[in-house]
Amino acid sequence: MTAWLEERRRTAAEQNEALAIPSGADEHWRFTSLRGIDFAAYASSEQAAAGSPEGAILADGDHAGRVVMRDGGVVLEQIDPSVTAQGVVFGSIKRLAAERGDLVEPVLGTIVGYDEKFAAENGALWTDGALLHVPAGVKVELPFHVAYEIATEGAAQHWRLIISLGEGSEATLVEEHLPGRPGYANGVAELVVADRSHLTYVVVQDRHDQSLHFAAHRAEIGHDATLEWAACSTGSKTGKTRMETRLIGAGSTGRLSGVFVVDQKRHLDLDTTQEHDAPNAISDLAFKGVLLDQARSVWRGVIRVAEGAHGTDAYQENRNLLLSPNARADSIPGLEIDTNDVRCTHGATAGPVDPMLKFYLRSRGIPPLEAERMIVEGFLEDALERIPNERIRTALTTAVMRRIPL
Picture 1 (cartoon, one colour):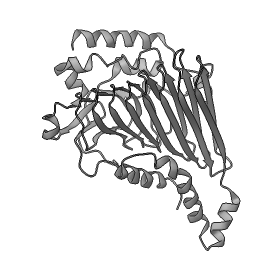
Picture 2 (cartoon, helix red, strand yellow):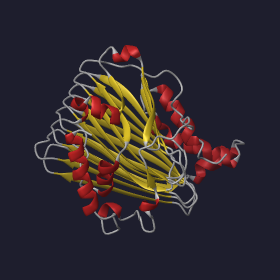
Picture 3 (cartoon, helix red, strand yellow):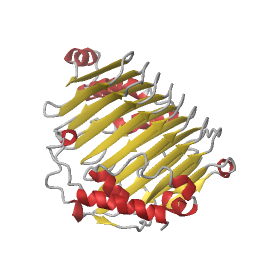
Picture 4 (cartoon, helix red, strand yellow):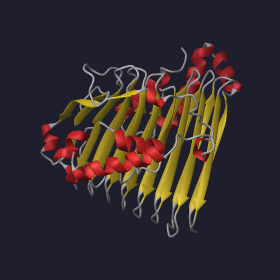
């Protein structure tokens, strides 16, 4: 292990030891209880599980490259030779930390720090993951695909991801968390979107219904750069995902779209921030959720506008459709504005299916469950339409609708 990496692991381990597991006294955990979870019961290992991953919904079709991590290690690394010829680097982050420290060291642990319990644990214990580096001016049309799977029941998977786009480059990366076996996943994704570059980033969380899933995703967006970020959550028993965008360059754009379906007694917690640190930047967040049975969702969204970030245009919304009287959705939008000449708005709703709409469909001979599915699909459609890639959009729509009763 190189000296710089050893030092960062040591720093993270010290922070992990010092930080307690979050409780309801922490404002960001007020609606998500970790009481009764024995994290030590999950076995961590650097070993990769043999076999092929199952359940990927976006693995079909052509890709610029693929990485698969099963349990503690990467079992598949593929990259199109024509992409490699353009100077693109894609593969196991553990391998590249040793071979290409010049690409890993400037990013690892600098975008997502170690001041939060789960991020600190990951910084100390991560075993593998993926890195994508696209040099300045290079535009890759085909998507890159990264899959993470817990293949051994009771395993802990500490995964990592770095995406680094050079100035004026373009790329698409799809990150899938597969059903696998019940276990504990804790990951960190760090994104650097350099000046005038364009990244499309799609995250699909479809972990086993008895798994725990915690993740911190954070992006820094440069001058006139664009991040189009789509998130789809349909799996895991409980957990928390942080999605943070920091607009550090003038004229930068962050566009976040999210859809989620939560059923049974599962609990989903999404924590988002849109940080405006530069003038004339745009952020637009739209999340839509469907809740069934006794499920619960929590969305906390904060728009922060720093002093001097004039001309900010920021929006966030969270709309929830409750298909059961026992389901619950908590939405907590917030604004923190330290400058003038800005436009910041937010909205949040939660409610059942409009009975008149259901009556209209049933009066046309459509069975009750089919009518409800049509209403759900229509409700989610505008959020899914924000995903620019048609193939990805179609696959995600199919995956989401599988969760809705026939």
